[in-house]
Length: 218
Ligand SMILES: *Cc1c(COP(=O)(O)O)cnc(C)c1O
Image (cartoon, rainbow, N blue to C red; front, side, top):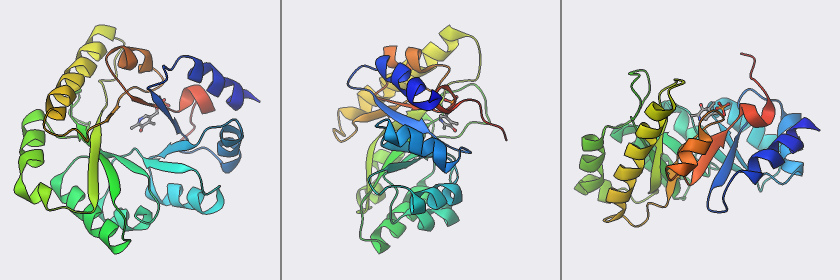
């Protein structure tokens, strides 16, 4: 079937140190099963309710990643099972994740989102805010989250050099923070349209939807 073939084609382009998040948002269970049967185990969704419905019916060994912008009141629904939250973009959200993780007696792995794009519509910390949060005493007191890396989205543009520059900037922040925080081991950047550039610029995790599952109909 198409999905298995697309998945193989993508995988061939990924070096072994880059992991693939198959972005299945808006796609039906059968599509996820097709990718699962082809060996894919990490899936990304951007709505908590949709992800939870899928988690309930799909195999237990799937790792569910939340990749979308997140409202604090939704965290509790995925706290029992979410494997990695990519888009943590505020201190209050991080606190809420910690609180809900504690209730579930889990440690939830998070990536902090960094605002690297030109568009103001995209979310994330700027570099200064990021450094302030990571250095704060209150950050050290959150016992049920583990910040394991950074995530970023480039500007939606055809300008390849613009995209490359934004990814390079994120990689630079990541490398410099890693000096003090060796637990930062994941750099989530790159989607269907720009993952090759992202990998050249140091991505360790790509989030790919339409190149695997086809275009989305909203
Ligand atoms: C939808 C989405 C993706 C995947 O986009 P494609 O262009 O379909 O590969 C990646 N990251 C985030 C945050 C998304 O919302």
